[in-house]
Amino acid sequence: MEEIKKFIDNISPMSDSDWIFFSSKLKKVRFDKNTIVLKLGKTEKHLSFISKGIIRLYIPKEESDITFGFLFENEFVTAYDSLLTQTPSEYEIETLTETILWQISNKDLHEVYKRTSNGNIIGRKMAENMYLIKSKRELSLLSKTAEERYLNLFSDRPKLLKQIPLKYIASYIGVTPQALSRIRKRIS
Image (cartoon, rainbow, N blue to C red; front, side, top):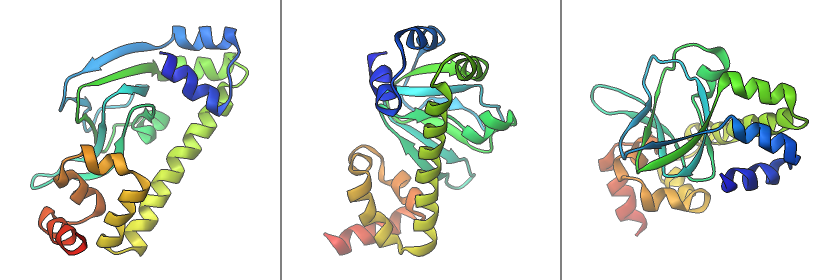
């Protein structure tokens, strides 16, 4: 739980009493590798902090899934649109490794927003960060070649390339695994 405190303190330090209240709402949950955390069509009920592990966000398709996000240790994960609207998710969240999450329910999260002095600041900054990541990826898909998108992963998220199966990276940059193989041969 210390990693969450450190992470939050970097955003907006919580008073001891606010931290005690917030941390009392957290629940530690463990998942095995390749476990679905949120199924397509289910409504998101939690905001989770990744203490250990790697998470993939994707749209399941019959022939091949469409991966659109990866999250790592010391990051928050949620189907944010589903959490906000309390409507069924249009995608799934899956662990790619053994994973430990600290979860807070949507109900408790709103209570933290109400009862703590900087809960809203932390929530807003987390939402802004999620938006910036999403916006950057969308602009990349619209304005860069697949090779440029792949090369940008080296500078933006080097952990991604070391720990994620290539089929998911190919899907993430919007190409087939075969096309990714050709890109990798060309740049090596």
